[in-house]
Length: 174
Length: 351
Image (cartoon, rainbow over all chains, first blue to last red):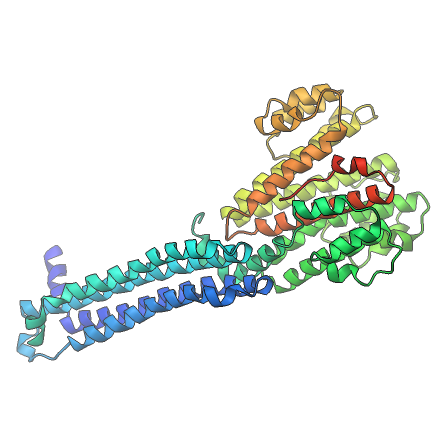
């Protein structure tokens, strides 16, 4: 059984894997960013009624969430430049398969890292808005936590880029 | 799932939670109370309150103020905030907010029935009702002669209908029966609210369970103390205790057989959270017990704000406002009657 399943998986075209990787990188990143923005935004709007001074400062939380979506777009664009056509005799060569899987992995890495990062920054941003409304000295301290949270998205981008940098010469023939 | 409310709570409840936390920042602080306690007349109180969030509500009042006017206007502020939140809320938050007002409805029903028994005018009684507990057919309560009629004519259409199953009897309404009716209704209401919160799950159910359990236990103690020396039998007393809370069931057994305050104290001291309350009052004295309970309640209500993404903040805010209105009423009465030495007897500072 396992031998036939593994053969079935290797028969899937590496183009499919690469394309799905690119789709996940942008799609799931945007999901994370949007989730984070609505979590922050609804609290920010409600809290700003009593304390209008918090609106301009707390837009930083929304900007951090938005940055997460931008990471996803950047990586998707980089990945799709690596995707080139090969003659059909060479589609199932090991190098082509490796390139396809590498792009798939890069996409998943950046997508899910950004999903979690977006959620994290969104929840912290919501608490930040509510506590800033009560006591304005808290804002800068909570911002430090948010900065650490948004670093998670950067880790995803770095690893995703590193995962396919080695394959430059292989991918150029793929 | 407990712990993951942060992911989806803000879809429906984020805006209102932020609004209620904004309202909380408008509660009077200790420095406001200190200023108010040093006032000489009610006009001074009005002036100090104009600087707080109550300003717009008290501005247009003509100068010889009465304490009831102050309390009425402050209650009006709470009602406006509540109605604003209720019309923006979706399920299940809207049901939760409505549950908070059923207690006031019960109090209004009892007020009108008692007043009618003592031959008061219905209009006068309606003005004294709490605005959050009004419902449409409330004026027809004055017509009912016994509990069955009360139910059939008026209460079957209100949200209080399911709480009546335990107290429909054909007995006529007199003072004792009305108090028993009030406590039976309130018991059914607390249990219903408790079950509703358990169904909501997550942080809401955990925090609300603690707050409602404290309420149930406090009512049990008050029922016990108030019925010492009356003709309420032990079994009747036990029927008025709710079936949840720290005291259920063993504490209730012991409270039901207590005959004086020292026995009640002995029962309560077995429970560590209540031991600290009873330690504050000396033997044989029960006037300070109310204040000690209020202080403990305020402490727990403030703790509800420490966690985000749950509904208990709404309940806590309504209760804290109620406490603030009680404080303002006490301060106004003391100032109006020139008894400022007793002001600190009953003012509970919230922050």
